[in-house]
Length: 212
Image 1 (spheres, rainbow, N blue to C red):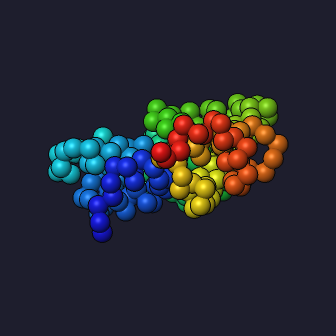
Image 2: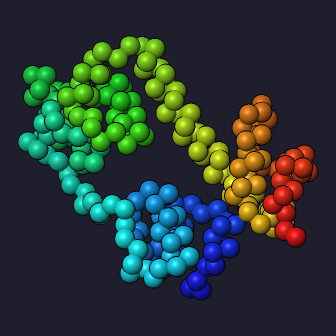
Image 3: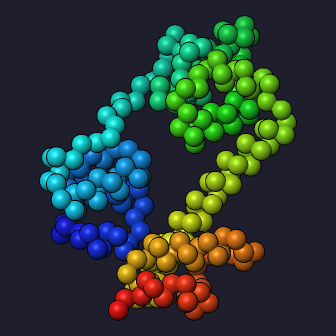
């Protein structure tokens, strides 16, 4: 694979899977957040060789926790804890019931902890919050999570469509232009999809990024 240039890297939008492939190709760390992968590639393309670029975090080996491994102090994020049969056994024993079913409140709280990367929240916190969560809070958290996911999905599709359009070729920083156009679309009542008409409509704002 021919090495991508820094200019190409800046001008194009990459999904996380694309970044992982590039990092693998250049022998860079392939784990971490999308921002971290971008950081590794940027460093690689601007100076130091790959063997001098150190990951910001160490690789984590996924561990499957058994019911005996789980305690009230088990972390919800980063420990390998998940809502599976082993967790169900733990909660059945904790609540002294024969069969335990996970509550929606628990799923919402754990999902939010993962979204916030809250590495301090424990199983004890999960139980306490799920038992005290008010209806309005539950609906707010549920709406927040679904809204964030939907917005990310729409943004990814918008950028992909823009970068694949012939209109995008006239700009030096495609991602920046896409972000400007997306901001207008996101705040409007129109469909959250890219169209070439947007380039014409907001031409004044994006003119500074046209190729000279």
